[in-house]
Image (cartoon, rainbow, N blue to C red; front, side, top):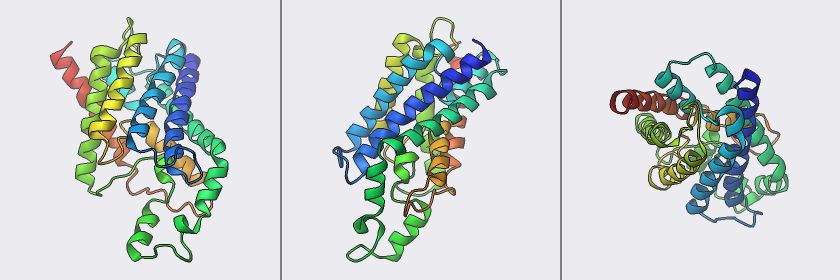
Length: 262
């Protein structure tokens, strides 16, 4: 695979991943959406199908890593580090494109949601110091773009992201790789998608299961940049956890693989 193929493949694949994954979050969250309040099952299966679609689309070009933690794990497993920066650049750029496209698709719903007094404040709105403090950290639509904890504890949140990513990356390394071992295969895409659903259902509750640094950081940057009315904060104090945690998890998973399976 050439450098251009890797960058283009990861950009397209990660953009599709975030467009469909962020799209289901928008569908469930935004007040004027037909899927409003569809719930956690819709989100977890939506992300699983997003992974499936993104992998099948981008695998012929780049091997469909779509996740810096997966790229890191494969580099540790095989010792090939030269293309890691290209993969990471494509993943981050693609994640930002996907998040921006979610905004385009749901533009009217974002405008309606973020000007609704029941959502952002005003007469009849809940007005407490606790709510104001929470919105200073994470605005009312940040969850469409990136993840956040239900209980804010750095150690617990970091551990959750590490453990979830270990499960994901071990599944990729043991069951998901193509014949060349440099990315996901056809059957591996389905296995990985189902693993993502499983992680979301079982381990996703505490933090929203980023398990992918680009998936969280790229859309969080877009949230900070978009001209959304009353959007609130982007919670940069938490942003390091869904980046560092998955990278640690990916490295641990690669170590486990090299010791136990290689």
